[in-house]
Length: 561
Image (cartoon, rainbow, N blue to C red; front, side, top):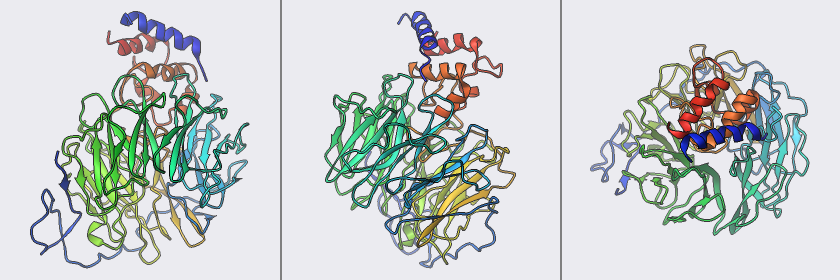
């Protein structure tokens, strides 16, 4: 959708009014008689060397009628980036969308019935989560799904809400795997979303940008990486100049690219004795200086969690040395609702029990009270999701678990202080491996549901749990892997700003298209900006609607007058 006349009017009005540290080391747990801690380490609890007992079965919450659903998988790999919730048919209820390695894309309603046109058979495996957005402005979201084979054969698909492949798709990008999840963002500010995709041209890689009609950007695109892409990119205005940048990850380097495909000064950042894999970066204004920092984990001989400024320098208190490898992407949120952002990241300790945990730090790297959170065996590898599900103004934390005990996996749910929530941990049958939970009000009853996959030898279960009625809907849902379609990893549910119509944490000219869309086509706005709340960000005069009387206030916020 391109509401050009009203966009130009608002823009013209606005223009007239304007007149134009050293590394720290932190352990998860330590043996009581271990002796002196490493420099900077934090003692949190003693460990006697034994394995903690698995929580008893029977405390798990009930699943929704019609669930779990069973989906065959390839022997090669199971999906590792979870499920999506989205309102495909625009009826007010949400559906579950799941790609799997059986080469199919699945979509069910909340009662477990297949949506019309689904499942859809694709050319190869769907290992990573799709992206959902209204690309053509017709009020119904499209599904963007990448596929991959064991070594090659990836494609880019765009499907409508009925499972029909759009004209010009699927795209074959040199018959190479198109890894990771798609990123959707209006990079050129024309009111239409672009698709960012990473091609694994081993031993190198390329970053591509496509329009929704399949047209590929030229100029400096595709951008050639000097190693294989390792994680889903993220998009944000790192330096606060009004133009966004793209953060791209290779196994041995991080790139920050301008929209024109050139490299931002200070980058790439090469790694020594460490690598990136699976850890999409998180982008957020960690230090409150008005620009965005990059949060990322790394594994290898020197596993660390990094926070970098937009120029590639280390933020105060970072990096922090980890005991073991990190695979899960970091999450940034305001845990206590105090206006200060916190950083969450996990370790995958395999059988190394003291390393099986996830951490929560302040913006300057201090360990939060009662953290790290200890897990039995296997550690945290899936995406960590946060949401205020009980209305206390603080965020709750949800993550799955690498291992299974007695053939049952784990889904952990804690409060902001690391205390288990009632009904948690959940114990789905099978291995809850590298997926991460999805939380939302799928049946539109005002209460939350939680979905997670669990893996068996030849199939996966799609588990959908009804959370207790005390867990009432108190904020907007996060519908996709790693926060949103820009993949920022930021969960700012308590920090919505009036006028920030694209929910990037700023009020600037990039919000004009969102404001115009909220004025002219609210359903299309909600589809394109699924993680925003237009009544918080766009209803600037408090009359309960986004309408003409909000225009002057919006222009004032843009111009500072």
